[in-house]
Image (cartoon, rainbow, N blue to C red; front, side, top):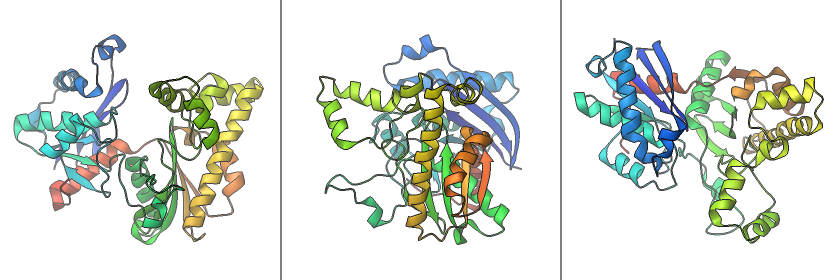
Length: 352
């Protein structure tokens, strides 16, 4: 039996879990005090603070670092790399300290994992970071040379649920064409073609709006916003944290939007509810075209996939393309554990 510690940092919390082979035996969500977090100028500076809380939590739950065969943390905005499990090396840590695509709490997953693993001489891994890139060359073209499209998406969860959907279909993931649809605070739609994600909507700046992200905004209006007297940081904050559904409804909680739309007949919330479903349907349609409309399944996942009304609204547009499979929530913790387990048992990991 292999025992694996899994670490998944979020903006204001850190989730940890213990797996014994494929079985989860413990999971804890650690909420972090906002005042404590604000003491750190950069996200990377939070590493010692979060590391120490994780060690304290493990001790309270009766675990020691010596109990584990490996530690696996979530990967963040690293260099663009293919899908897979990677060993955390000094090169990974260097890129976390000097991130090529900006800071994100997920960057801390690999950093903390290596810090803890090195204490007891066990390996640290990460699996399918946000920057997984398997795009076909034609998908990299935008409309302006030198401004190539990039691959940032919910790779960890999408890869995991699409493999689970393949099991339900009864064929290997590598033999299927699947459209993955992550429905969370951020949204992403991706075309999985025989095991490779050949195109997708970049969660940072493309596709449907999210709960607080603008998605694909009208280019000329965006240029005008940039030259309206606002700073670069202000514009990035607006389109990355104050746009999307939030800009229409004043809330980033999807359940609040849905409840107000249907229970209180709030027109703004109903409009935003229908609009985000409409935009996601258009993204799904574009990925179906990428797959030449040879699609085995469309898979809904993420927190919003728990809403039958929302999924039905999207399906009303795209249901004729392929069968719909709903796998609500996120499989990130299990995906991390299974990636580390494959690395331990089969040597199935890559070098960064």
